[in-house]
Image 1 (cartoon, rainbow, N blue to C red):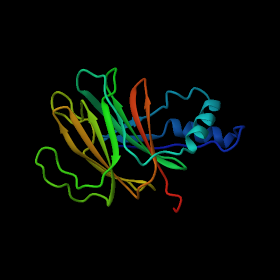
Image 2: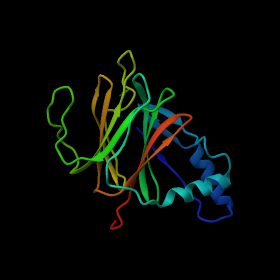
Image 3: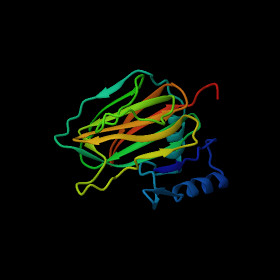
Image 4: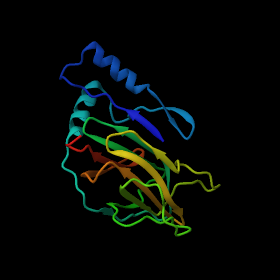
Length: 206
């Protein structure tokens, strides 16, 4: 699981300190599956783009309803990474996929106990409020059985608190996101590489 920290431009003209912070952010090392990675945001090609991109991300209305989309994929799509970041007004999780088409997805706040898909046992130790992310057809492991996404993680972010894979079986992946409380969120699809982005707003009371 990668914890990426983003710097945000605060004025229309970049000062020397701003440029330093942007360069520091670009080469900031992070950890995924026990290895060190360097992440470069491929969609940001200039400092001007960085400023407009961050401003566009700052505020959104969001929803607390179900967000669902069917897949056009003919076979199981592998989840290759899951990364978490925090921003001034929201926390973000990004799922990256191998292939040319996204899996179908259904994202919702859960009201019932969560069961492990193999055993049917109730999942213990979850946050009081949690969001379910279902991906299909998808898998979070390679053909040799090696997992591609950590099975569990905890965070100290304002909204996102917990990550747990509760199903990775026969083309279905189910992930539980523990959150501080039920707040609006938004879902975005990105390409090159294929990504599914979930932004969870920070509570106005915090």
